[in-house]
Structures are given as C-alpha cells and as structure tokens.
Image (cartoon, rainbow, N blue to C red; front, side):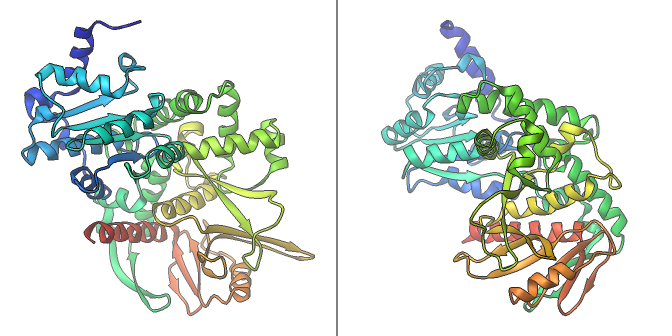
Length: 469
C-alpha cells in the first residue's frame, strides 16, 4: 500500500521539529554520556568521507546522542533545514529506500542534497540497508550520513562486508557503573587512594561502603539503561520498561527480522533460561535439557543473542590458561545485569541469585574496553579442581595478565585463585568482597562496587585519551 505524499511529508516534518523551532524541545533533559564526544567528532569529520554507523543494544541512548548531535550542529551554525532525521522503525517508512526518503525530505524545502546531514535511526529495519547507504556515501561527497542500529554484531558484519572504506563503526555500550555513579552525583562518597599493582595505581575508597553498595544494587537492577537510571521516576516499574521495550522488541521483532526466525517463543524461552543462569558455568547437555533444544539450535540462538548484544559467551581455559580441545563448557553473561530485572523482577542483595548478578555486573564493565581476551578458568584433574571467575590472557595467548575472583562475601577463600596465580606466575591477584578493602603483597581484596567503579572509570579515561589523541 502506498501512502499519499502529503501524509509522508507531514510525518517527516513532525520528526524534524528543529526546522521550525531551531531547537530540540527535550535537548536539556539528558546528560551527555562520555561516549558522546567521540561520536560527535566522527559526525563532524570530513576526511575520510564515510558514513558513521552507531551500534549498541536498545535503550542505551543511541537516539538521544543523535538528537544531541543535531542540536550541537545547529549551535555550530548549521542551517536546521539541512539536518534530516528518519526513524526507520516507523511503519510509514517501511520499505522506502533511503534515497527516496531523502528526496521526500528535501522536497519540503525545495533544496538540494549538498552540505546536508542525514540521520537514520534503527537502520536494520531497511532491507539491504548497507547497499543503500554505501550508494549514498559514494554519490554525495558533500553530505554526511549517520545511521544507528540495535543489532550490533549483525550490523558490524554487514558494515564490514559491504561498507569497506565507506563506514566508520562506533559502539555505544550500556551505561557503565562509573557513568551511573558520576552522572547521578554519587561520586562524592568516594575519595582517591593508591594501591600497589605492578607499581602504584590510582584507586578509590569509600568511608560509607554500605551506601555505595546500595547504589551498586540499584545499578544491577536498572542502572544499565540511561533513561531509567537517570530519571526521577526510575523506580516506577522499571521491570515493565525493560521487558516491553527491550527484550520483547529485540526477541520478537529485531532478531526475527534480521535472521528469519519463525519460532520466537522458543527463542524467548531460551533467552529466559540463559538469563536466569547468567554467571554460571554451563554445558551443552545442561542447556539442552533445560531448553529442550539440540546443540545445533543452541549454538544458533547464542549467536543471535550475541548479535543483539544481549549476552556474551565467556570461554573456558584450564589451570595453565590453555583452551580445551573439546568445548563442552562455557559461561554466559548478560551484557547488562538489568536485563535480569526485566525478566524476573527486582532482586535484592540477599537473594540467592544476587552473587551471580554481581559477577555479571563486574564482567559487564570490561565490555567497555578490550574484552576479546577475557576467559574464566575451570579445571578438574583427580582430586584437584577449581575455578577462577575472570582472567585476561595476552594477545598471543601465551601468558595470563591478571586474574579476578568475584565473591559477594566478606570472608572469601583465595586458595584456588592463589593456586592459579602460582601456575601462571602472577605476582598479585584480585578478590572481590562485600565491604572488605585490604591491599596485601599478593592479593588485593576490594569491594565489588569499588572494583566495578574503577574498571569502568579506567575504561572511560582510556576513551578520553583516544578522543583527545
């Protein structure tokens, strides 16, 4: 069914309110994330001439930072009528090629495509989007094209395949714990200190660790999503927002559209099981029994859920940090612990599942930096068995760089961690706790909340360095 051109024109004008008002009404409502500056630099970049593809899961602020970029372009003197925004999950835009949409927008002002900025939100809804976008970039050297999408891996795959030299990918992850603390102004609870970790390292301490931990519990429940975490009414049923707007749309709409999935109910049930088991050691037999799916389907669904950035697989190594030849065991972590809240409701710090969510929250902070070399160690030989929750190996896979044991307790046992450290010549390890903070010669004992803050704070500092350089 074709729409009357006047209907389409009105919709485009409604979506581009700055043409008449020179401002975005809600621009001041949202704080800028630390990831914004790097993104805006790419929007302004003239050379090389490339489209910017903004990737990340749903509800973590992609649309907001696109709007923020539009407002900053206006503030820099760009004619508002030369800035166009299209949300491609809007039904009226379905199956309309990008070029046709652009010309419909240009007709409103009877203008050419020269020196314009075009923003396409949720571009994965357009079939063969990468071909359309590549064509626009090639034919229009004096305009800038920016696209966003919620299925990160699938977008990146198509971007690499079809947009080589034409697209620049920029990944926007869920809200880090450091962002959550800093943007809410809770960092006045912290003070700087130093720990000895291969030399002196900047760290943080907290005199009121119980208050800081309460913010950590809130972050685990709904802090990964900026709109929920930073709004005044955030505690009003965040479970419903997360469930309806994130998991339902991704499982029931995004993934079926991208991968041609017919049995969405089976995928939803599969995701529910993996989410409940976040942070646990799993094997194919156990997952097959719980989900009533075969190994081939399990691998396929895991690939899809990773593509939507809902989960991340953590691979197993032995006590010497070597991979197993037969991969039967693995860990699944939610990329954002708040997804658990959407599925199963708010969780308290005393709940049985909470220690697993703590481990997931700590793991999630590492997704904001280089994470391809993260593993967990699990070994069993005779009577000798053990596990270390998180390790990082070197790029050549020859050595272990650090090891962390995550515990939600103030009396953690470090025996297996020290055994692993000894086998891999690590001088010092990290073990996390509820409230204990002690810096020993061979072990840093630190509260999970402090450790999660430091990891994500370091990632943000590294991001700032990359932007400034």
